[in-house]
Image 1: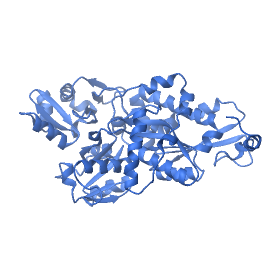
Image 2: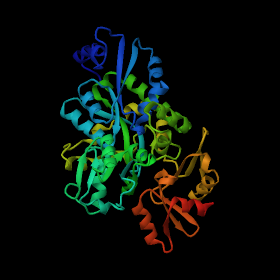
Image 3: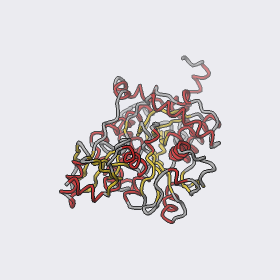
Image 4: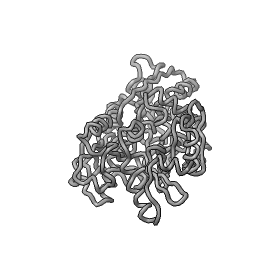
Length: 445
C-alpha cells in the first residue's frame, strides 16, 4: 500500500519519535526497550537467555542502516507492568503468558495504543505449564477437596485460568466455591508456607521450584485440561510499522536463542539459573530436552485457537471485554525474519516424553526408555544424581522422580504428577497400588 504524500512526509520524522525510548536530539542513536520476565522461564528465548547470548545486539549491529542501536532490558515479575509501559509508549517489545497477552491486546486497543502478538516462546499443548500445589503435609488429595478452601493465584494469569477451568470440571463454582486470594506468585508461595493459603495455583517456574525445595506437592497437573498454554512476544503496533527491520532483527535473534536452547539444553539451563537465581534443576524441568515446555517462535494455529477460548475466562472475571484475537495475531514479521525456515518450524511437534537423569558433574543428561529403567539407574547411582525426571503416565508432564506419585502395576512402575490421577489409574487397574518412592526404587533395583 502506497502512502499519500502528506503521510510519507510525516514518516520522515518517525525515527525521532518511533521508540518512546529513542534519545531526543540524536536521530542516529536508537534505544530499543525490551520488557521481559527473567523468572518466567518459558520466555527466556525472548528475555533472559536471549540477553545473555547477546544475539539481539549482534543482529542490530548487522543492520548497517546508519543508526547506532542500544538495547534497554527491563525485567519485571509479571506481564501487567510490561503492558502498562507498552501502552505508555515506553516499552517496544515485551514477553508474557497467554492470558496477560490478551489483557495486553485489550488495553492497547482501549487506550488507542494497539499491540500485536508477533511470536511464541515456550508452549505446552496440553496445558502443563500451570500447576496447583498444596503444602507438603496437606491432606488435600483432589480438586474436590478445595471446596471452601483458601486458594492463592494471580487473577488474570494463565494459572488463574487453569484454576477456574479445573474447578468448573470438578463441579465447583470458581467464584463461590473457594476463597480466592489474588496474590503475586512470591506472596502466594509465602502464604502457602505460612498456612494462610490451602493451595496455590501458579505458572512456571513456581510449582516446580516449590516442589524441588520441599515446600509444596502437586495437587493438580494443568495438562489434565488438555488445553494449550503458551508464552509469547508482543510488540507495539506503531513500533512494528515504523521499525520493522528492528523487530525482524529481534525475531531472528529469538530464533537463534531457541536453536541454542534446543541444541544445548543443559548449558541453557545453567545460564538461565545463573541469571535468575533459580536452581538449574528447576529450569531444566521446564526447559530441558524433554521438558514441560517446547520452544519455537512460530505462531501455531492450536495456540491461536486456545487464545480465543481464553477470552471467555477473562470476560467472566471482568478483566476484559471482547478481544479480537485474529487482529491481535500478526505473524508477518516472524515469517519474514525466518523466511523459508518458518514452514518447518510451524510443523514442528513437541519431542516425545522421556525419563531423564542429570548426573552430578555432567554436561549432558541421560535418557531412559521407561521410568523403571531410570529408577534402576538411580538406585545404582544414589550419590551421583543431580536430578531425575519422569513423565506423568497420563499427561506426559515431566516431574521430579522423587516428588512424583508412584504406582506399581505388576512389574510396571508408573509415575504421576498428582495423587488424583494416580488414584484414578489404580481404580481402573485391579492389583495396581500406590507405592512410595523408596519402594519404587527398591522394586526397580
